[in-house]
Image (cartoon, rainbow, N blue to C red; front, side, top):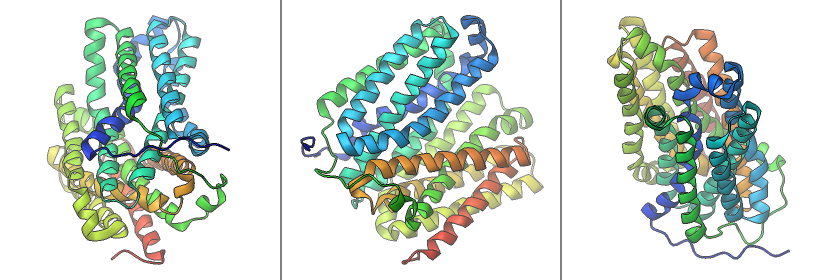
Length: 395
């Protein structure tokens, strides 16, 4: 069997981020930029609100589930073809969405768009694992990519609303299509194949029976789930209870992502000092500290910037400390099947976040800080317990 020709990946860290980040951004942007136009879509497509809501839910589901398919494929045929094929599919479906007038076709195209986004995400994170495994730069890249996935939801709805107000809802998908074509063109020229020259037989059992894989994946789920629950509860707390305007809420929301991006700039230094397990343990401790501040604010303060957002700034620091190392910790033993391992890592995280995060929001109510505090405490303590069960516990 012939393997893709591997060329040196000699990009500087900023150049590598500029190459990889657009695919990370577009996958999230396609979901969040669409939110402001959801109310007008039933009339525009002659369908029901339930069908339009289905396009949001299916996009999220396929984005996570599709990685189980594309991870092994990237281990067999390479990262580059999966990335370019996924980007081309994403771009084509975006342009077709801008031109669609039929609800069934619109739903199908959203599924295709999610499939393309899923392929690009797998290829991107597998490439990071191929190139930067065991190197300090990996912590910075993982941290920044994780911060991007959190920052986009803060700005995308505002961007979508502005585009729709000036140019109509179709322009939103046209803009996404144009951006994806630009990213595809750049990757076509510069994204070299990084897949190992030969990979092991694709097998899920070694990955799923690995304790480090589960410990670090739960740690990743703790971090990303904290932002998910924050995203789910913040509008009701800050707008409905604290009285923030929509614009004020958007800017306050964005400060959390800004804290994450600033912290990510120093992630490499933290990891070099504390190591992978040590950084994750400290990240969980910071997350728990933020959760305790949320509990204090819920018990003794009125809903406000101080009671809800300031603790979330603390949690944001913990999110970065965790996401900077969880991928390396979970995937360290699977270099020859990195695509499959990445797919499982992302899929398991999506399931944990979606199920556990939604459970706490439904159980404790989405108009208080209790769901966020409970989710962080439950998953962070589970992660810390798992770390101490590893052969080399965190110190």
